Length: 109
Image (spheres, rainbow, N blue to C red):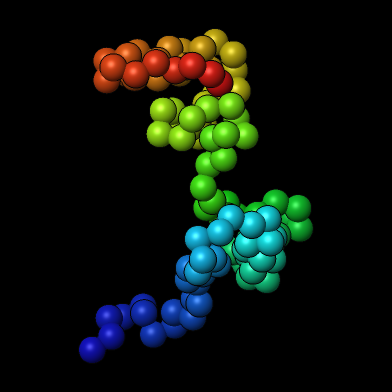
């Protein structure tokens, strides 16, 4: 039996994958993934304002060598911090103290 309210569900969202079966990195794989994302307009192309998206995106390997670091020696994080500078400094301080407690050091923002 289908619960009330689910009969009208029409969502077709999902997950897609583009990968090399030969384990080869290629800019074409990235281009293909971006093209596939843009074909699913409600997930990746444009929001109602026709400018922004809804946060959908792609996941790739991190090019550590491009950043000048050895793979496996550093980590990368995405931070959503306040815009106000003092609040941003406080957020960074909490992050640095947390990582210090775990034996790690923030080396760059």
